[in-house]
Length: 320
Ligand code: SF4
Ligand code: SF4
Ligand code: SF4
Image (cartoon, rainbow, N blue to C red; front, side, top):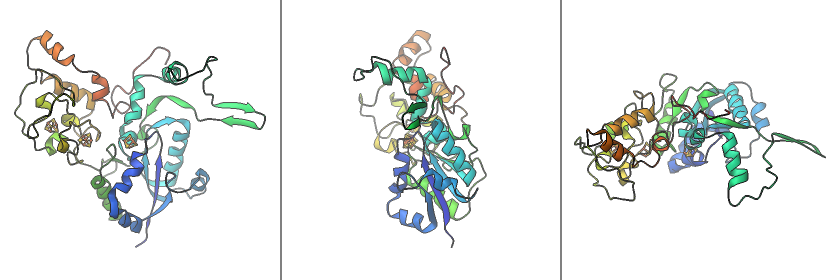
């Protein structure tokens, strides 16, 4: 059987998604049997010019991880789109913006001020900031432009499929590779994971208990049989897609939402706000406020992986 041509790339990413492909252990041999790697910068010495020289649509599948944070990542996303038959947003950052997408709670100016001026370890009395171009005796030296807003892959190029997770689990990856090899991919636009929410996949007892106190994970050892949310731990299961086999719940930790919103949830953060708000054990407005005020960072928690893909997209700031 002819091998399919596979490309893999990382943009605004931690590298975990690239490593996750190796988490399939000995099954990597099956992937090597089925796929010919034509581009994978983290592992093999390919150059952009190698991709530029390829025929359009000559790559069968491109697994693209990471969000779009700068002009180089946008350029490579567009290049790989042109060269690939099937573009797959791989991992939470490419699908929804992920952890890099939390930068949409601020803007480029604030980030540059913090990084190049205000941190205690920075010495920059002249206030020098990175430039996209500078002339030196040898000629012009350029840097990619750092965008004001982090985008998901599908906000920059057309995407056929989504593989969620931070990172995707080995089973999620193997199921997707299997569907590619057997030519059994679902309709374009599908997410290659569960359809329902994580709560549907979770077998903890749900007793519809109300909560009078919110705990952080280090403050209690929760009952391993009972729903974590009902024990006061903020679990993102009600608004998160199933498919990870309740990976965090199995070790008594609440879900943080890395599989993104399920098919029936349009905005993960808004759905979580509503789910948690309805659990407060009081009808008194002041008491409800007191319970919910214990949240350290509700926006950061509810939109931890999905801010750029959400209805909010970003915080609007003066001067943006
Ligand atoms: S989804 Fe998670 S593991 Fe993958 S690149 Fe983003 S932060 Fe890293
Ligand atoms: S909220 Fe969390 S612990 Fe509770 S049922 Fe849903 S996934 Fe399970
Ligand atoms: S339980 Fe939630 S945070 Fe943990 S892997 Fe699954 S979707 Fe991601």
